Image 1 (cartoon, one colour):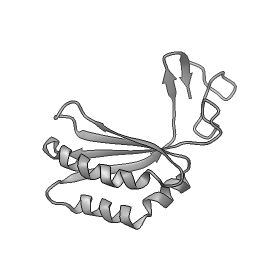
Image 2 (cartoon, one colour):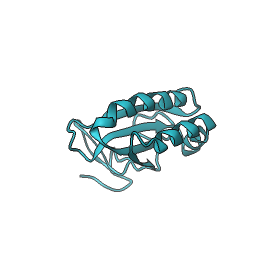
Image 3 (cartoon, rainbow, N blue to C red):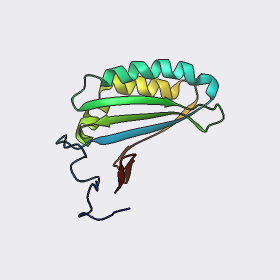
Image 4 (cartoon, rainbow, N blue to C red):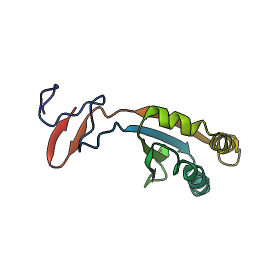
Length: 133
């Protein structure tokens, strides 16, 4: 594994991303601790909240991942990509998004614990390249 700024193909979170897209991508990851029996109802409501983000400036994409086992602690994991932290902050400040998120969190019928945060890539691997730090 190569490390350090001079290593070929190395990517640090503060540098331009691989592929030369010319922009920095911010990774928003939110893990949801929820009873497996409540997942379908939550997903339906999540889709409505996520749709609000689709047209926000700086939004790139989002995927909600569902655990294959009902015994998994985090039944759902959302991974979204934004062009910048500022774009994400502006989008999540939207009043309708805030209201829907609060309603989901406060819904006693679907108890849930969410752990949202923005992340930078620490190390990146792919089948055709060495580790990128």
